[in-house]
Length: 362
Image (cartoon, rainbow, N blue to C red; front, top):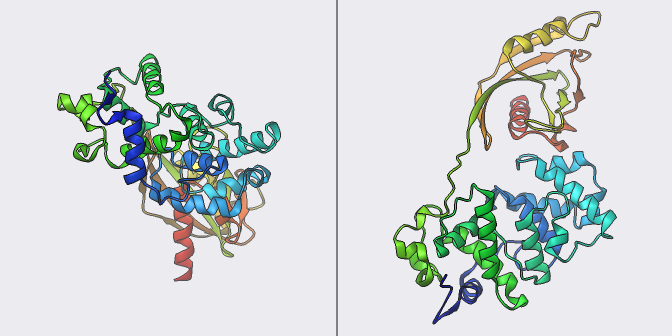
């Protein structure tokens, strides 16, 4: 494993490159505040930087420190997170803040080993916080960094297998700088290389500071790495959404179960068939008159597809207008047009409600 040449070790080259050419304009970069680094790391998981920027600023404005986040309600946290996706991250974010407040006196632990005991903090996230904020000599291995290290070493172990991933962790740890004070630049540099140079497709090898020692480049096939044989199996599901709206603009919302799609979020009632939705509208809640007698109008809105990581959701929204005192025979409650924007809502549901609100103004 050749990681040293006339230009220095791999770590030294990464550090020099990062200080001269790496990214520096993102709001969380250069911070030694564990709260800000942790928040950015969680938000950036499986999410583009451009998407995260606005959410990061809004979170800091509302929750400037871990104590403020710990004291918030889950609904408020999910409301601010709404639209960012992968909502388990938001629930773990809240739980982690509470754990830091109650178990660690409001201060993030200073080692990656202890950080990993907190909710929602995995090995790479813990290492990033420890490297950026506490100069700990510990490797990170997020998706971008796996690609860089795998290519430099021409590591051909199948990362779909846990044993091979553990091997790569060991190799990555061997590459970290000898000086702790270089850890922030080294860690950021690997992230920057993966995000801007060592791309999954068409890597920019000519601009890479590691090109001379990159085994994958010497082999002429950098895009073959990293190796991962297991493919994500996608599925599809059709769901019907009941957008029930009163004449005063309130909508009927229910809370999703704690597991499954949109777990724990406020949502329009969801049905697995059009017939089940129609039955609910017709039966009402067993009151003196069924919901259909209070039905002012019904409209089948245009269906659309919402793409999740593992599944395509074919959504069929049905809008019904109901009289002011109407009730539905399902769990939930009427939520006013003033209150629902602050709730944690699935992204497609939020878009539907916003579209109806705009239609009402037209």
